[in-house]
Length: 292
Image (cartoon, rainbow, N blue to C red; front, side, top):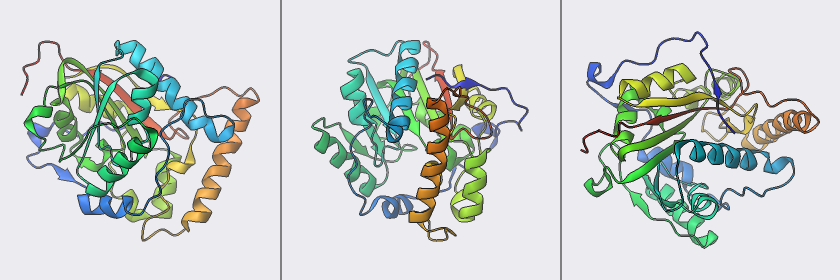
């Protein structure tokens, strides 16, 4: 599934990192340790999942199949997931696409959960417990593609994290950046449910996220919203949540399934700025880039 191109009139992207001396992370490893500790071990993303509950996995599979085809990513290529704590994607990348997938995350609990998911799937993937802003030198310039899901929005300025992720790429490599759509309904609901959790995010529209990549010297192939709806993106588990996780997740699931049912009945899938849960940008590092 391709991200819908979007040129909506939203504010400009944050300034380049060179004009902002400090990189500010809105979260810490301790925050993520608390998030991941005690979680049940989920299965990896299943592209063959059926029924309404399988809607999101099937659409992610379509997104990746389309994206990998468009950038020429092939079996055997190295892919790094940055911010891979609790990732259901790494074993999927190996099983469905034949990639040599690895992950990096600064949360020991998140890394352990990722390792557990991979072990249970029978497809172990190397996990590096490290800070993406200060990575082990052997990881730099190593990967054909770097994917992040829900990472870039936790840093300010956005260019600081995009520049750091670019450092992992081979010349000519590809950055695939996905963030929640905090400018739309997901963001409005998150702010209403738990303002503190909302405050851990930098809201990014497709033009803003794309411009942050361009400011780091990348060529943007595509940028837009992904999927029509998935309200389960809203985090109801924060300490300050005004809605219990049980009730919140039920309401989010029911509302999302209503939309997916209408789409199964013939309503077109329409990624848009109001209800889409995600924003995605795909961008390429220059083939002539000098490795760090």
